[in-house]
Length: 153
Length: 153
DNA sequence: CTGATTTTGGTACTTTAGTATGAAGGGTTT
DNA sequence: AAACCCTTCATACTAAAGTACCAAAATCAG
Image 1 (cartoon, each protein chain N blue to C red):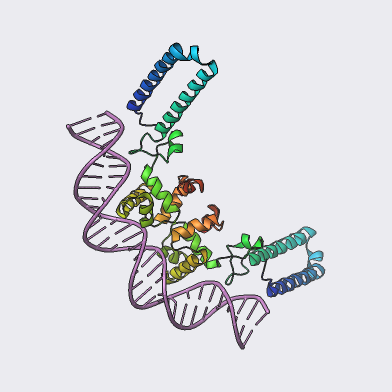
Image 2 (cartoon, rainbow over the protein chains, first blue to last red; image 1 turned 60 degrees about the vertical axis):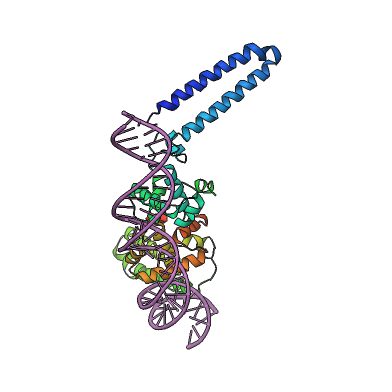
């Protein structure tokens, strides 16, 4: 978890504080007098579950533009992700055997962009061809099994 | 184990018979009187170990030209091998990320031959690109882990 | 020996991949 | 605001991959 982000943390704190205030308002003005304790607890559970999901989503896709939604495992594990999000997508589609044109059609980007990503991938992996990139990514554990690629179909 | 081979079996029998005769000769004319029993047993062990190695090698590379030395698992498992020996070698080197030229240099064949093998591989696997061939071979279990490819290095 | 398959090699051609270089907008960090 | 990275797109070029078609020698089962 390098590159600590301050902004999101502030946002998380603010949202948490607002939620707590909201809970207090509900508690004292309406809920305890109107509904049962079960519903009150259920609401708390739901809200905080949603908050947790949202926080988790934010953590994972924190660097949505500058980071990696697909590298969540690496991020959670505390590793610095070598490839960016888009590069990971391109690499996985590469490993499925798609051509640059097909990758572009799949990701709604031009073939030129795919080539740019390819060149960057090769540079980062220290290889010169896409087949080498696939092999290298497998040995490095970037591409593990079939699940990752299946999830994109 | 389709395609029963008669010739090799006859050869195995002949070699076995010759070896037994040879053992008898050694046993009765020289060894027992001249050397200790240990050396005699050691010779037997060595010879039959060599025979076993040779037989194993022959079984594995039985279809060396018309078959698959690298498809031994599939053959032993009773499956009909889809790809030929050479095609398997080319496919594995492909999966390692080698170019056609590099594959040719590794196998001491011309790049034209590599291309011919490639086209045949793609045709047999029902794909159009080498990256697709690698992916397809993985899903089909033709390429399993890293051991197979490592053994070629 | 014959037929089938493998392996090897080639030419000519089209398609795809990859490189070099530039550019522009957006988001993050400091 | 400046520096940095990501993402997108583009052109022009070279290299590699792939296709179609052919051909010949070697191996092997029957």
